[in-house]
Image: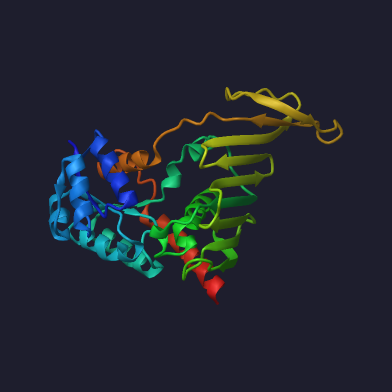
Amino acid sequence: MKLKIGVIGVGHLGSIHARLLAENPEAELLGVRDILPERNLHLAAELNVKAYQNLEEIINECDALVISVPTSLHYEVASKCIAAGKHCLIEKPITAKYSEAVALIDEAHNRDVLIQVGHVERFNPALAAVKSYDLKPLFIESHRLGQFKPRARDVSVIHDLMIHDIDIILQLVNSEVKSIDANGVNVLTDTTDIANARITFENGCVANITASRISAHPMRKMRIFQKDAYLSLDFQEHKVEVYRIHDSDYSPQSGIPATMLGSIETGINNKNIYFEIPQVIKTNAIAEEQTAFIRAIKNEGENPVGADEAALALKVAEEIIELIYR
């Protein structure tokens, strides 16, 4: 049975959600709701679905909602959906404030409602391509640079871009945060447009995260360094490179072609460096995210980005912002 889903907020990202849900065989897009009547009617007509005129109506008629309103409204809208017992896919960040996220989690628990959060990079094919590796990061370097887009002015670059990498890094490292150092500047907006954060974890790993929304050349890259390997992930181009140290008699078992780049002297543990290019299976990350949401509701899969994880990423983001403005 198809899940009846509505989309609340059909700006840039919300309209993408609506179009993909209209094509999803596991969903029935019931309709859309936007504060701008013309945009609401136009997309509804395009997709041949209902253009809801008020929030309560779309909430009551759907099984689940995708919430893609401005971040400042996430808590207000999601809270109404949860009160009605409706499952929510909330665009990141989960809420504008960590305290709101905590309250929302409590509300969802009391109503037995599922919340999934739109940290869509979790579904990036480049990240999926390295899941088979035994990742034990010691140092992570990430750069997420974007060109300026006026639609994102309601939040800082930390909430807008950096939080993607914060979320991924928290999952990769899987350790408590020990300390954070951060710097940032306002350039075009009243909030931070360029930021850098250095996070030290209890297990010794260090992550250096840079984000900018006023870059001439977009970039979404992450480099992972560990004792036996170096991995380079390009989230934008969906490419991965892996450099691993193995004994000189190493023979790849994974089916991934490995090229020996250089030889370390026999006296230094008789090891060589191998270069691998894992296969990246390109998919639509938002479509994958939606399908995972539907299957989690139907108890056919795990919730891949739970509210607790999203709240933790938001908490770290808030700490970074506080350090910048102290």
